[in-house]
Length: 245
Ligand code: NDP
Image (cartoon, rainbow, N blue to C red; front, side):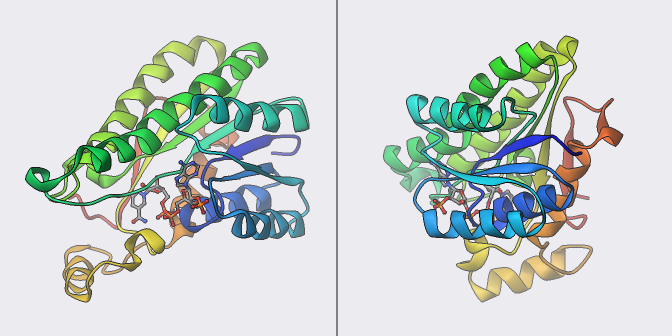
């Protein structure tokens, strides 16, 4: 994978950080995006460089059209191409539907859905000119199955799957693949606040009897951007310990 250049949105922490490190270990240069956590993003970039690749930090809010454009342009300008986009940036604002505020609904849609669209639109323009590229969108088991208390998040992650399949249809003829990864419960800041009771129940429901590690998701992303996955597009790869069986 030498001479490949990737942009990972939300690469400062959690799953995004693990994806950055895994791509770096596979010899891919990485642009680490964050919206606020510049120090964490710099640490991720430094850890990528320790793996022998180039890495930069590109700060910006993916939900803002101008900033999304700059995030992608800065990446492409640094290396002259953008070969891989991983749309990983995401947030939650949980509540049951009848209590959820419009602000919380809109905030989650803006980052998770609109942010993924904006970055795909911008990166897609470069990839079309290059006639090559790989896009991986991080969806969720919640986008496939729904989850009480997450109507905004479920809508955003189901929407990501719809966008993945649509873009796979639009870009396939130019050799660009677009796939999604749907993680189950993964140990990150996002799940750290789950009540002990919920964690115990989930651990018992998950056939593999544990939450996933960020590296489990990163391995699926690494596969989808590798040459071994060149005939796979428009697919959703679940990484959930068997939770949805
Ligand atoms: P974390 O909360 O640990 O990290 C979120 C990342 O997204 C951070 O890097 C954060 O940057 C970045 N981010 C948030 N908003 C924006 C924005 N507007 N623009 C740019 N970057 C932003 O989340 P996880 O690692 O747990 O989740 C990563 C992805 O995986 C998300 O899309 C999530 O929905 C999905 N997922 C997670 C699961 C889990 O169990 N953890 C399960 C299924 C899917 P900063 O540091 O600057 O705040």
